[in-house]
Length: 227
Image 1 (cartoon, rainbow, N blue to C red):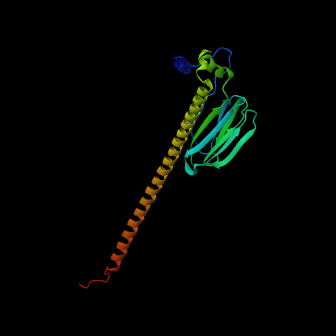
Image 2: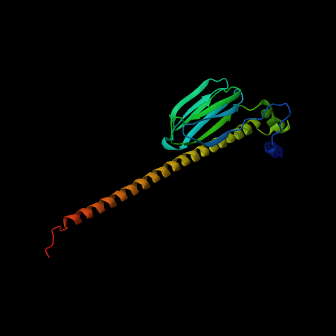
Image 3: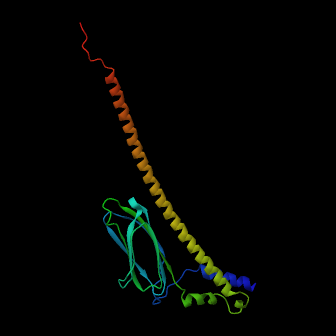
């Protein structure tokens, strides 16, 4: 009975929405993803705030456009160049530990004068839980009930489940990006095949007409007919 009460109290604590106390600091930064169209000959930058002593994982992928490549740079809040890549289709980079401030991510398509690029990128933060959040687990259960419930095992299991679910969501997002890139590539190939097939058919028809006309000239009798 005590174990059931502890489990119920723990479930209610997990379902309660987080409450931000005035003066308790900014809320945790959430992961994010974004897809945008980068015009030809243009450069576009994004700024992402990050807390101190965390882990920032940046992943990008070009899912549309000729060549499927783009230049990528990542700068720290102090202006230090952390990553610089040229003409890449995708990339994954991790900054650990992070500095408090705004990180600058830039995508450059200035080397292309005609083709625009469709770019997808994702930001993933991973930081240790605050001491208050960890202590909240113990506060959800009465001291005498903690004797019957292994709180450490429950916390470890739920944390492992949360990590795996987050990784599953990230993998599904990447699979959608791969699917979009492959679909755009296949549609582009289909357009090229249809265009050149039409050109070949037109050339074949033109050659056939020329051959018929040439053969007709060979059998034409141009001698004058006596009257």
